Length: 75
Image (cartoon, rainbow, N blue to C red; front, side):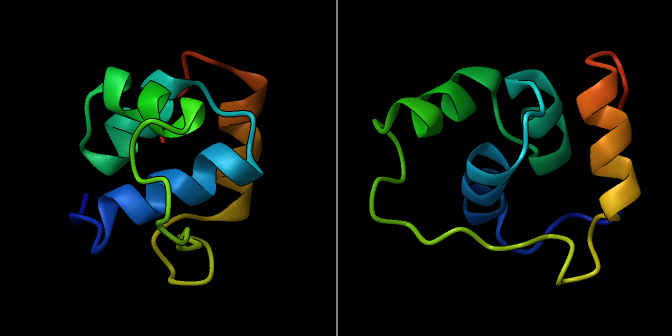
């Protein structure tokens, strides 16, 4: 897997726009699950604009759907 360009901004978008688990988002973005939880709680990256990984070609929409359906699925 190629490292994503803006991991925190990507995590912000995934938290806001999907029902993926914190662990799935953390693994995909190369972050710790507690950091992703902090993003969801508004404690981390409060003013950061999310970056859509689908639009950037870093993640396919069907991969998100598979991950939303199965919390053990690795993106």
